Amino acid sequence: MILAHNYQLPEVQDIADFVGDSLGLSIQAARTDAEIIVFCGVHFMAETAKILSPGKTVLLPEPKAGCPMADMIDAEQLQALKAEHPGASVLCYVNTSAEVKAECDLCCTSANALQLVRDVLKDEKEIIFVPDRYLAAYVSSQTGRKFITWPGFCPTHARILPEDILRQKALHPGAMTIVHPECTPELTRLADRVASTEGMCRYVKETAVKEIIVGTEQGIIHRLNKENPDKTFYPASPHAVCPNMKATTLEKVLWSLEDLTQEIEVPDAIRLRARRSIERMLSA
Image 1 (tube, rainbow, N blue to C red):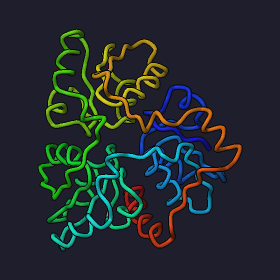
Image 2 (spheres, helix red, strand yellow):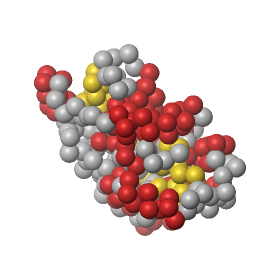
Image 3 (cartoon, one colour):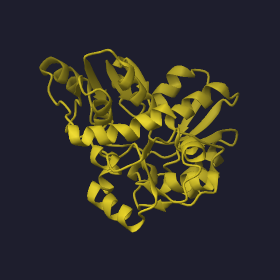
Image 4 (cartoon, rainbow, N blue to C red):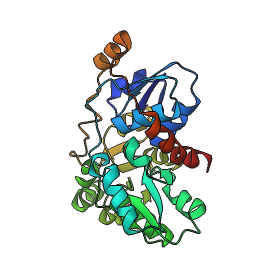
């Protein structure tokens, strides 16, 4: 099975068996009967697939495709934060390493963070939410919950500025604006809708609006155009391009399949602990 994230190159999305966001890809990785999973994404995503399917071969065609946000916190730093707040429940964004997930009570994605905080963690007095301070800020604004946060963020989403949104709104006064919750609070306040990439795809199909300003990594616009040929999409900023997501090419996918190289491994001691936080998310 070939899995591709919504931010991948258009030609990589076109050859994938499934294109989606982190939650959708996690579910597909857990459900597939395929013996080999080729993950066209970044390192933490392929790790998640391996955690859920330890008996399968998981290939990451470009091994250097990492996530800067995930690299902003490691297990030791989270352990130190937990020691400062011994009674807190730990919620980690899926954009983290397996080692960090192993230190968490519950994993979340941008698609389900709100629901998990409202339902699964509703009785928790203190919640550590790592590593994305902007996703935490958005969830806090919607739930009224205060979190113990980490100063992590997505550099690609941080490149989208409020003036970019205002410029596009001036150019396209009839367009609605949809942004990712990894964006800054200044951006989410300007949006008509805040959603994960999969949430964006669903909402765009349902809305009657024909013009949409898209505040996330530009790779998703390929899928939006394919699924909604009657609508027009405007990237909020020309700078919203993730170099890590663009590192996987068709050639690299072919080479990884031909040679079965760039295999992802997660030590059992880490995998078993990390799996609990992911399975708790998937079962919620």
